[in-house]
Image (cartoon, rainbow, N blue to C red):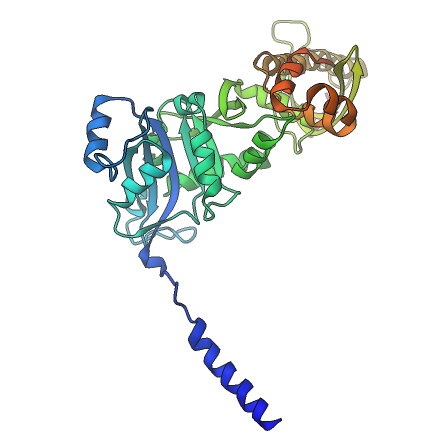
Length: 407
């Protein structure tokens, strides 16, 4: 027994020396990538640049496809602000907290390898928060983008993938006033949009999940850089498979949120009551949605019941008496009628492209499995069937008066 005890003690003492930190990599030895931008680069200058930096040129035939420009935003060690008032190294400028470098390549992996040739530390994607692709890249297709980042185990599924109007590189080089790090400003813009009820949760993991479904398509935030280096969410970029096929208007985001019943609600709108100045402003506070599916004449028919609650926040004329029950009912009725048209227009817009971003096909798969397995089976067939599907939108509205004034 004593001999066994001595052997166990020896094993316990030896194990730490055998396991150790043989594969450790200090944070100072990593190039921490915070953001990535991807643009097209089909120019003679880009080909000359690729010829200079490529590690495969002259040895392995390159793919016969257009070049892309990939830029990364790398955090400089010790200079990222740690909290409110922190200067991140004494100077407090975003140009001193991150380093932006760009290269060209035939694919994402090719560009990243070309980039690694120019950076002394190993590129680390464990803290990647934002991937911005240009509209031109998204329209060509995100097959390569999705494939590379889904295969990279360092990339978190809570990162954001977004489509930019125009060049994506400028989002990496931006210098917003509210944040020292451009990537953090992009994240806060979208995260606050979720909290304010102006944008749905659509992290990169959710997008990949939707793209993989047979009865649903993916969408991404469509953003634009404004002249003051601020970012505007311009709408939803919706896809068919990996290819972007259209963009909604900013207010049409509310249509998606209403149909899906996403809370909190946060969009405002004017309600006309007759005269040229007789308008009131309402603000949505709560949404509820229920979707049912039936098969009519061998075609899916969807009934969408949407109920919403609103606050009456403003009136533009003293002639409007909001303490009158008839006036309140009139506001509810006008908003109900316009909402039905609004939601139907949003659905038809996606039907034209066969892009079911709402996931109606998943309702068919779940509630009518026999019909799905017999008539549809594939994502391609559902895209065609979605164009032919019929819809009935039923809307109910409830309005509240708020504030310290009754009239």
